[in-house]
Length: 136
Image (cartoon, rainbow, N blue to C red; front, side, top):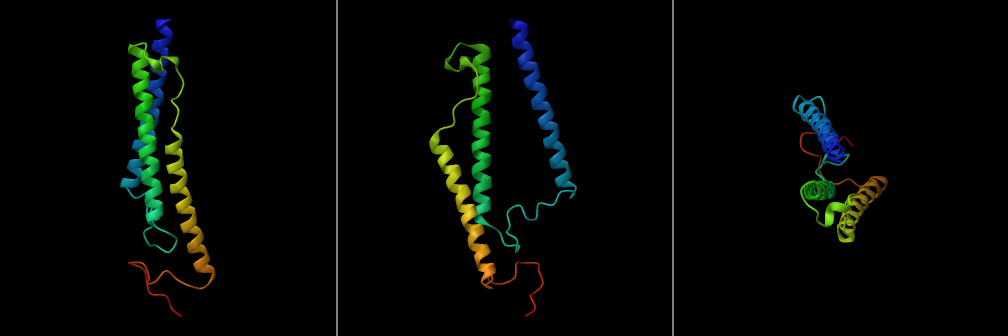
């Protein structure tokens, strides 16, 4: 039985190492400008989008919090017989899911508003910084 638990932990660490290597590769490609993040937080017109920023931050915070809960449950499962010893993933509270849904819907509403402004011939104002002026 102890060898099965050791194998579970070993496979878990191997998977974490593979994910970490993919993360390091991604960071390396970003640092060497092989991956362009110019439009990660900006709209199609080049302006910064607060709704994209909010969605990205909420997603990272919830994902990292969930990861920390899973890691702590694994540690409890390894060294004790607490409530987390039943195995499986922990439940995500409905309030957290509601906040993620609100954040995602605010992003979608902002995309809809900007798309309707483009269809009506209206622009968002001046040209974004670093872009040439639009000709009439």
